[in-house]
Image 1: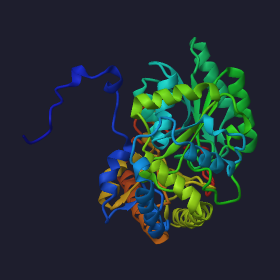
Image 2: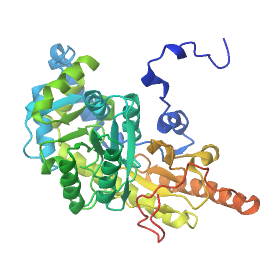
Image 3: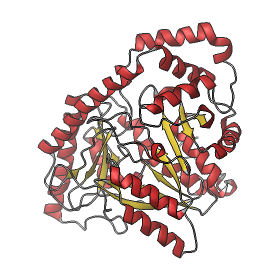
Image 4: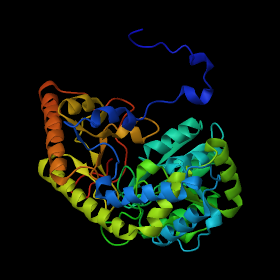
Length: 437
């Protein structure tokens, strides 16, 4: 059979499936992975920076010496050895009071979010999240049939007054948001960091409102300019669920993450995990445990910081030198991403096919908003490509944007489509202009 396959199962799907859509990023992977395309799209770490020979020897030794256990089923919470190492890792971020008993190992950071959604969200519940926010979290909340309400950000991260208004607006409807989902450090996709003062304000607001906090912290160790601010979980123990992963600091292919949860909730998360995957991979856990026990992982994080700082600077320099007037962007002090605001009238989603034709890929801003706004924005990644490749990608992207602007100047244009207006958000650190994102 040829052509488009008809879906004969539509009327049999569960209600939670009917509204699901393909993420902007997943749809780009097939194209962006072509060697002729400069990808500024994904969020892949630079795995080639690892000592791959030593890692390969470590994995072979794990199979040879511990294969009888590492290739067997494990327990739903994760091995005690790995949970103890995770507590050691968290001390580098300032979380010093964590117990291995309160850690639940997950299949990457994505499963951590899925477990929390399964645990707390009923259909129609409200989740508050920064706008823009992580596309994978939006997918999880969508699958849980929750309603995401975005809270505005600026260069200092989530705006406390906007959070208070979102809580109040939900209350006026006779509802209560279940939790705040936040990436306070080197945010994905905006690259901004919640300021020290605002961290305490946000926690105070949530505590007064009885609002749980889900803190997603995959990038906190990848700081380029001194130590990152203390995580929210280092400041408050109750009511804060701390999620992280080894995908950005070791190997995403192993799919190992974790949740640090209030003790009373730990057992329910384990039950959820067992119902979901039975147990996380014992071999992957063994690999991460061996890496943290036998290899200089702290030095490896410093290597990543230096590489990513150089690549961030290369991307920012190229944006400064090559982007058309009216383009603005954030200046991240860590992490993997720059959030870019296009000149008035340009539409990142409509422009995408022409960018691919010019052999450059990015992620349109629409993927990071639950309501489809963000057409005036795009996310650029700097972790994977070398500096000269990043500059070439920006050159190609700038050319596409110049062509779009020239066509609008000649033929005119109505600007962004109705319902897809720009969103207030992180202001550009590198160019003057209004606080738009």
